[in-house]
Amino acid sequence: MKHIYLLLAILLTLPACAQSRFGDVDFEQIKKLQMAQVAITSLYVDSVDQKKLAEDAINGMLSKLDPHSSYTNAKDTKKLNEPLSGNFEGIGVSFNMVKDTLVVLQVISKGPCERAGVLAGDRIIAVNGVTIAGVKMDRDSIMTKLRGPKGTVANLDIVRRGTNSVLHFKVVRDKIPVNTVDAAYMITPTAGYIHLDSFGATSGKEVHDKIAELRKQGMKDLILDLGMNGGGYLNAAQEVASEFLPNGSMIVYTDGRVMPRQELRSEGNGLMQTEGRVVILVDEFTASAAEIVSGAVQDHDRGTIIGRRTFGKGLVQRPIDLPDGSMIRLTVSHYYTPSGRCIQKPYTKGEKSEYDQDLEKRYTRGELTCIDSIHLDSAKVYKTLVKGRTVYGGGGIMPDIFVPLDTTTYTPYYRALRRYNLINEWTLRYVDDHRKELKRKYRKFEDFDKNFEVPASLTDSIMAEGKRKKVEPKDDKERESALKDLQFTLKTTIAYDLWDRNEYFRLVNKRSDIVKRALQFLSEGK
Image (tube, rainbow, N blue to C red):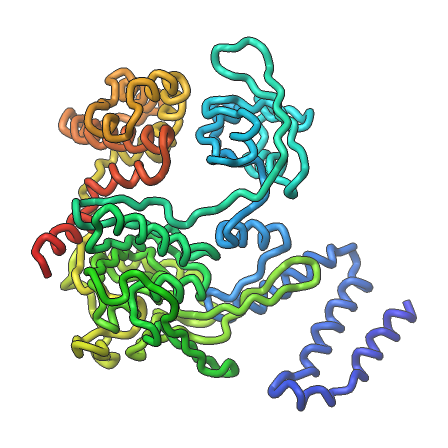
């Protein structure tokens, strides 16, 4: 017991001379935290988990700050960084679970599994001797077994349709690219469309390469879709914005209490810095780096923003790596657009739950459905840098052309079918049963788009399963309306399973009101 009190005494007598070197850091309070940790760990009546105690303390402190300062443990930190890092190490397949069995949906081109001979539709039943089929293993556990360091071996036991025996494949894990551009195609003879899912390490190069490809196909104007894009790396936003702004143009600047002002400007060989019209699509989920690009293009009058007011995340997080691989993401400054607008929407420190309800409040107030319900802050008026147009601060980027959210698109019956995951479940079964037949009949997506009709047997099965779960339409009118939506969704999902997200978006965009408005805008020659 004496050694505990001795340690506490040492902490009490630690010199505070370092305080002058760290500005307003109060080392007395730091000692207090250390003493509390030592006292609880050593003297508390029950044993305590010291790691959890430290993590709870960190989370407790961060919870009193802004909504975006956060802590993640080592495992979650790695998982969060993977989608933005540009690659991960694994076997190179996308998959889903059908009746507790892993079914390969797509084999990544030139990846380890393709080299080994694994095919779409194969069922992986064991990895390195560990059974993963029929044992109700969760998805994260399966991912852990499939992934691993480059050069390590995954011995796969596979059942292939049409064979009765188990096939064995030795797959050498490798780096698997993670693409952030998930759709790029000519949406009209002269207009290209790119959907950017997030801002990762390779986003700048991906967008640049796709613009080059589309220009070879005759693209003069570009629709860049940043809907549902939650952001990512700041330097990726700089690279993407540099495609559209002349060299040296300010893209964003950051400023904080301690962090000095930092400006990011366009640079490099952007392919649409002066030529071609640029339309950027945004919605209420467009955030952070996606708002930086949208705000820069708008402020420089280089393009037209179409959609709904963006999320409003304008706080800069600095990652602080901790010794055990965990990380604190601490807010250190604000983002400002070139005209001086702060992107961050208002918040109250320590009131994260209220902050999280902001989108719901926007919906309730009618902001997402009616432009007249949007109340912009008249005290935060700014001017664009070329044409002097009025733009507003106060949080998020208000589009130049507002497109309301259509709340009547789907019936309650259809939404209930989706809520029970019946659509995805039955689509997987259908593609699994008919993959070879569909691939043989529709060798090109264009043939599928033009000629494929969802079989009545599939929609009947989904509705019958819904009925067993007491999900039924209120009348024939709702049933017919839901049926049309169901057929459309099934076709898009089947296309995704047979090809990729590029083909999925080619179908989905036919119904998108924001995409339709962008096409109308371009057709008007503005």
